[in-house]
Image (cartoon, rainbow, N blue to C red; front, top):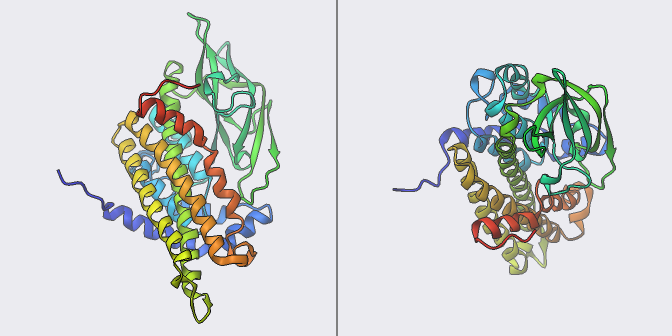
Amino acid sequence: MTMNFHEPVERAELRKAAFELASSFGHEYYLKQARSGGKTNELWDEAGRLGYLGVNLPEEYGGGGAGIADLAAVLEEFAAAGAPLLLMVVSPAICGTVISRFGTESQKKHWLPGIADGTTKMVFAITEPDAGSNSHKITTTAQRDGSEWVLNGRKVYISGVDEADAVLVVSRTEDAKTGKLKPALFIVPTDSPGFEYRQIEMDLVSPEKQFSLFIDDVHLPAEALVGDEDAAIAQLFAGLNPERIMGASFSLGIARYALDKGVNYAKERQVWGAPIATHQGLAHPLAAVKIELELAKLMTQKAGSLYDSGDDFNAGEAANMAKYAAAEVAIHAVDQAVQTHGGNGLASEYGLGTLVGAVRLGRIAPVSREMVLNFVGQHSLGLPKSY
């Protein structure tokens, strides 16, 4: 069998159109919104109107009927144009995927059309102050109260809650037979009584803010539960693999943006009568970034292909590897682009300095570098569990 390393024509065209749209806004627009405390609503709304935000969602609910690989391509192109949209990772990729795969017909009709066209934003809440990466220790609980559910708990580092209409909250219910707690997913409107959020001050320049959530006796109707409470592990991982694939694409796009800036500057900047690109001390590190970028992109495309084919297990391995590789190359790309620019690399007009912290985040979220290595060690290499 011959392997095809060319993306479908439709995705190539999608990439081109997405890049052109994001380029019409550009990095200056993105930074202006971020520094002023504004949002990238104009780009988000236009992307939604043109169908880019819902390409992975079913056609019968307003989506494009394609896969996560296509949505990831859109995010990569937006980031490569200097205008990454972080909420694409959570609203259409995580929440949209979970609801389309496991939600009731009523939930699909209510939420998916708005997520697809961008008029509705839903964010995802799993991380807790005391649980960190140990999702088995989540303490946010849901208890039955007649026909309702009552949620109580805390979440931390939840992106974009101030922009969201609802939050997909990972909580736990009690198994009546065993008494043990088991995970369950609930859609919580952000205007629910007892639901509060507080911004976490960050040293990142980003339009998307981070929040702590306080969930105190939030009463929800029975239909707020997504799917079957007994299938929550499968539902949870149905969202986490797309999260890693999208996280990788986010990093890949920023790496491409930084590499392009570094290469163009190296060609144009004249020192000692020649472009600085003639010096191997600058040319070789840029070439190394290009190699790392192409390798990470291949693994990201593999992860998307596996996930879209329904191979969740192998998609998990590839998605973790892709997220790891893309985060690393993004850091290397930005660092080398800054180094190539010299002092100009940290001057505001060159659009690189604010990316230093942004790409560093890729080693931490949506899953830490160390937890990826734990996964690969245990599941890919068969090493004993270390935690």
